[in-house]
Image 1 (cartoon, rainbow, N blue to C red):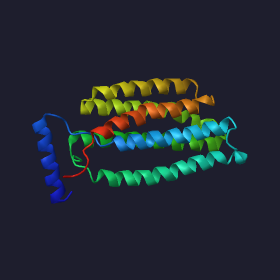
Image 2 (cartoon, rainbow, N blue to C red):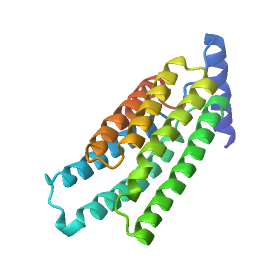
Image 3 (cartoon, one colour):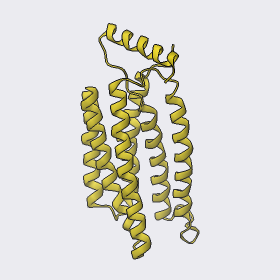
Length: 206
């Protein structure tokens, strides 16, 4: 952080203190992005499962998820650039938010790699379905931690909702409709709170 950014953050923190409120969190864009991306990918996968998309001898599924990975990489890079233009990045709530979701991403990556490895090694096409319940449980834990640290009571509701989605997906992970359910869940527990956070973000460094 250079001198100008530090001074900007100090001025921003002083203005917040004078107004008696906490620094807004900056993760709304990430939640919106991942919520929308998950929704599109899960819906596409479900559509292929019920033969509304051509399966291309099974290649449609790698195409969907390779495209998902490419868009995820590009989107994550763009979001990091966007955050650099925001004030308040050094606020303790924002740093805690970044740490919590960073840990969640690491846990999710381990689950995804493990499930895919199991599918390859055991030739079990249902192995990746185990990702569903674990992913939403991690979303719920991350949302609850951020809500507690940032004192955002409204966010806890989304944490409990994510836990409910996780429970259902653990019960019905191998049913085709679980992908559509996960798509709807992504909108509710990621995109929706993301939209709320985005509305509260500061526009830019002033």
